[in-house]
Length: 214
Image (cartoon, rainbow, N blue to C red; front, side, top):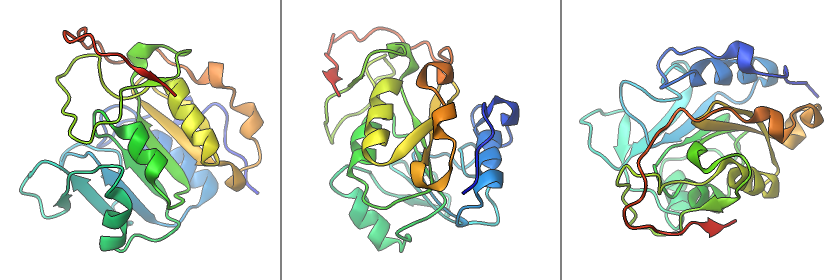
């Protein structure tokens, strides 16, 4: 069973992603050699996490119509995600899953039954390293650009642990998880050392909505 380089920061670089996600994904892929198939939802035709995986089989989905034939227009919810993966013929095991839907990310990941090797998921870094919270599940949620969105890194780590994944990197915007049965040095990746300062600075929630414990 392979080991992952720890830490992964040295691989961070930006090609077609928002920050350094391209490089981190590449570093993990080089170590694990996963199936060359990805799923990314919440994406933009010019900037997203899996655009650099040009030789892979892939599925892009987004609720917005960009007029780009590569991106399937679908509004993702916890109830429909598994049906959509069936609809587009996604394998039961595939290489990379990337989730960035500005709100219900945790609840959708929790619902997914397939077993990707690597999961990249946006979290809310403004919630700090210790709180284990998320916005409430609401399939009609639309982000208003305030701090009320997503879930904390600790909450994502809890969901990942329950699904058999270990947090191996966080860059202040996205968290990177790898299935524990695929590498042998998960114990080297301590949660507290994965925390990075927030790259976001969203304003307070004018509605003062409450986060829920996870």
